[in-house]
Length: 225
Image 1 (cartoon, helix red, strand yellow):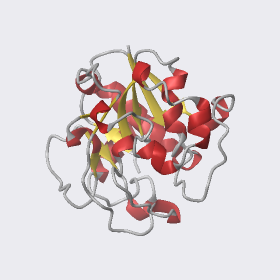
Image 2 (cartoon, one colour):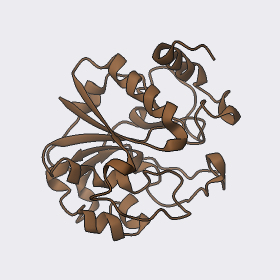
Image 3 (cartoon, one colour):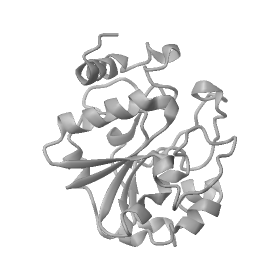
């Protein structure tokens, strides 16, 4: 079983559903999909949301190893994505010598604001945590107490690990940053990440790769937008 956790935000409900469908559609193995939905985890995640968090799962994503009882592996994804490849392929990239494996982006977003007016925070390792293969047994420092009190940079820059040698790499095609510098439209992308705003927001309905998202939306709902 492939354990997939997806960040859930009340402003992007449709994104969660379409991403979930896209994972199931292309997978060749059974998948268990769990939303990181705040009302379901309030016994372990009690952190108050700050004005720098653009989504409800900005920090709650790091509770995944706790939800897995620090056993086995889990894949975390932001909800503003669309899986075009077989999730079993990324699952096969798991390497026991790492605590986490990510696409190691080297870029800085150009905008000062994200979708819905959220502040675009710029920092080293930006977007690394938006797709994470997590070796939960090696993520025991991510206790509820730590996740509830650590700073954003401590969490998103993986300062909870002893060193960066515990951060493995996955190909950028598994976290392809749509319409960002250095990420041109091309064939063969495995997983699209609509970082600026998904096609489900009217302001971004014509963003690159919007057709792929709307095609999956139609298959999910039977509604042709």
